[in-house]
Image 1 (cartoon, helix red, strand yellow):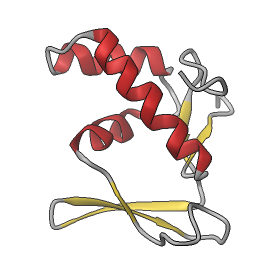
Image 2 (cartoon, helix red, strand yellow; image 1 turned 180 degrees about the horizontal axis):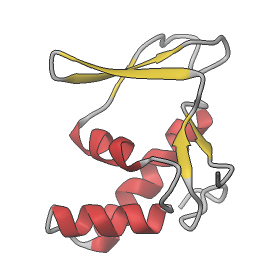
Image 3 (spheres, helix red, strand yellow; image 1 turned 90 degrees about the horizontal axis):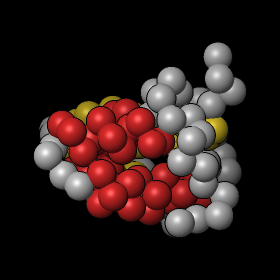
Length: 103
């Protein structure tokens, strides 16, 4: 697991991105400079990423999100936690997701 990721932490989409579903694809668009990679301007998520993204609401911690996804998709909680722990740090590194201030 990424050392900067806190599975008890609460995360949410950055205010510096906009996400829209277009023709069945979730597209994430940075709206300020310095977000993401210099090479990438738009991001799309695979089905697993989309499921995790939909739960990043700034209200639930990552452990709760993983448990909900495991129950909804009849998967192993450990497997889902591994997916979450692998995906969220990528979004954090690109500043697409931020740790929630707990409002």
